[in-house]
Amino acid sequence: MDEKILKILRTHRDKFTSAEELARRVSLSKPTLARHISKLGDEGYDIQHQPHLGYKLVGLPDRLAASEVKWQLNTKIIGRKVLSYNVVDSTNTTAFSLARQGAPCGTAVFAEGQKKGRGRRGRGWVSPTSKGIYLSLVLRPHISSNEASLITLLAAASCAESIRSVCGLKALIRWPNDILVNNKKVCGILTEIETEGNRVKFIILGIGINVERSKLPPEAGTLRKETKRDFSRLDLARELLQHLDKHYRNFERRGAEDLIREWKNLSAFSGRRVKVFLAHKTIEGQAQDIDDEGALIVRLDSGFREHVTSADIVKIR
Ligand code: BT5
Image 1 (cartoon, rainbow, N blue to C red):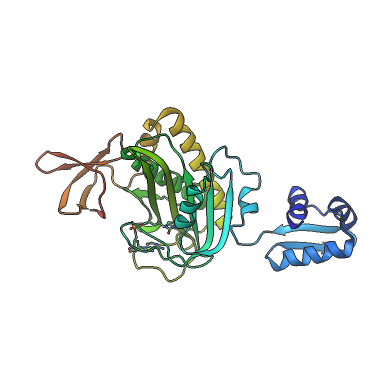
Image 2: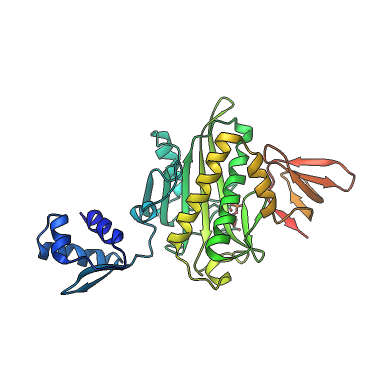
């Protein structure tokens, strides 16, 4: 019922809808309608009421509610199903179990907060409630497992682009999975895969973005602190889904060529000297390129070109 009321108010955004008309359209009496409106107010919807004019929606709650994320979302695959939770252990864990139950490609899982947000290699992701975006997507690309890192590239390009367009910030990608603004990490990506033989069965793509200031590790930055623009988490979340959809569909149709080209324009490295911490050694050289499986090509001082598939931290000089 609340959804029906909201749908009408959203469609007439910035205009009053008379109480009579609204009540008639949702088949409620006016007093019952008033109770629903008051409940929506408690949930954070700012609905103005003028006795002679009716109701007008003037503000949305600062929550990533599925209905708000989906409202007139212009995507074909990503976000075709959106679920939103209050606080979960990890949206990646939730998405994993949904994927195992057959959730379709593009299913998006949002949470307001995470109790056990995960980074890579057993590290954590600090996820203060309602201060960031915590999103996991179920993806079912037709690729082999050694191409899975292209999905991280795809996510990184989408994150950087959406931060640029919504916040007006020069977001850069630090290969493989970080987004930096003014050299501070504002976003991290965690790609987890389930395989069947050499094929990818599904991928859970987790994205964490720091929006509001709060207690975060020293290397972290937040978008609110870096930008002067007024934006909402909802605007950013919706923009992110649009970019992910654009890149994902293009990737499915045409492969990674366009993606890699666009990725390079957003890379913090391109030609810079980097230090790469691998599992058993540390290498230093010039970051030259990305290969067609998404590995970073580092030219060592000896001239040898090392293809780095999974490094830990890459430092830029
Ligand atoms: C990442 O790992 O950067 C991947 C983070 C992915 C988080 C998303 S949130 C939605 C989804 N559900 C999850 O449970 N996870 C995903 P890594 O490169 O390993 O970086 C982790 C390191 O970043 C930590 O060891 C800290 O040093 C630092 N860190 C932790 N929380 C941070 C934050 N909020 N902002 C910036 N840095 C953080």
